[in-house]
Amino acid sequence: METTLRIGELGQATGVDVETIRYYEKSGLLPTPVRSQNGYRAYGPAHLERLAFIRHCRALDISLADIKRLLGFVEHPDADCGDINLMIDAQLARVQARLKSMQALERQLTVLRKRCDANHAAGECGILHELVAAAHGESCACHHNIPHESSTASAVRGPFTDGYTTLATLPASLKS
Amino acid sequence: METTLRIGELGQATGVDVETIRYYEKSGLLPTPVRSQNGYRAYGPAHLERLAFIRHCRALDISLADIKRLLGFVEHPDADCGDINLMIDAQLARVQARLKSMQALERQLTVLRKRCDANHAAGECGILHELVAAAHGESCACHHNIPHESSTASAVRGPFTDGYTTLATLPASLKS
DNA sequence: GCTTGACCCTGGAGCGGCTACAGGGTGTGC
DNA sequence: GCACACCCTGTAGCCGCTCCAGGGTCAAGC
Image (cartoon, rainbow over all chains, first blue to last red; front, side):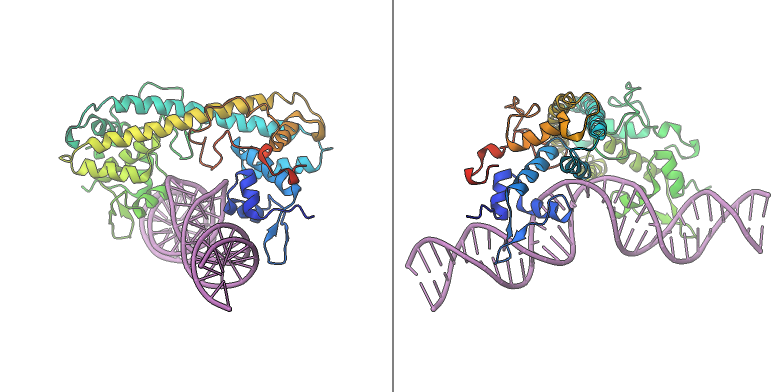
């Protein structure tokens, strides 16, 4: 008996999308399986275990590059694990930094949302006013009193970590 | 006197990278400016204001598509602003969902981190053990007692919202 | 035997929001 | 006359998928 799985079965078993499995293979995270006569990928228990490991790590939002390194540790259990600690520490730090700036973001959006209670014309919408005023560099409801959250990592990915300089600091020749 | 800015100056004034400004122009967020004789882009106060608006919105992690819609409202102040509210509500909901799952993530990573205190060989590293065991479907320190955080949005972007089924649910023929 | 439909294959493009080139032109100071 | 900072266009790359076109394979039902 040959206990092998086709890609769809492996996907079902691990909860990983078929396309994603192929992507992992292409990226070198999952070793290329043997093929059955019809050319289909045939996976064994080792693949199953490895893919489940990858999935668990991804659920912890560990990057594919770091997962690759972790898999290296799994394969070389005599290596020093200090780097694992560093990796998890870094991961934790990233998550905490993002968390912090997302919390700030939430507060800002909440404040902003309160500016408009009902349906107006856009010209009278407090939210829109607020956004425009903020862009002008006037002190805005969302971004004025949070001096120290500024220097942490940005909420998600962009370059616009908060606490930025506004148009208030502009050459006077250009203001309005 | 012509109060125009070159792209680098506009970038400085608003805190937006030059490449990003060109990207915004290409994406239709920033209108194409006039060119001076040498072919350089020449920006006026309107561009400055608009770019500052965009930047402020990005700091609130509002997507470029939504910013485009907001700019539409700015230009048509007689339109109904109900959609603005909906947009900000949706944005807030997204942020809150992410926040929640990031908090879960942080707890999980913190627990995981505690599994390894000092330098061992990787084979004895509690973190690695934990990750492997979790992949096997054994109840893991990080993912076992959080039944209701599961169905919220995932922490960042991936398909692996937490609380997934593990290998415990597998065809017996393939286990171990 | 034929069709239907579920599954599999490869290769490539697209998402968002930038970021980083290569390969060129322009303008200012020494 | 040269260095250097700035500008231009166009294209490719980043991450982690996700989707698609265009084809092959295989079991079930008629």
